[in-house]
Length: 76
Image (cartoon, rainbow, N blue to C red; front, side, top):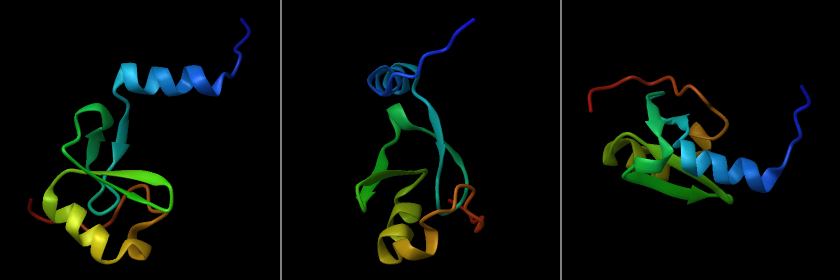
């Protein structure tokens, strides 16, 4: 079996499959296609489980950028 990489197709599949990502603040799994809380930073879209996590990120994005699993678990 041969797999070919097609960036355009990958983008379409991500939308179609509603891929999961992690909230950079708390580490919760988020479904990109149905996320209610998101923001753009340095050309990348970040997804959040709640308005509180989005606000924490917006106040100090450098603290959370590059962290795939978050690290601060808190009540939502």
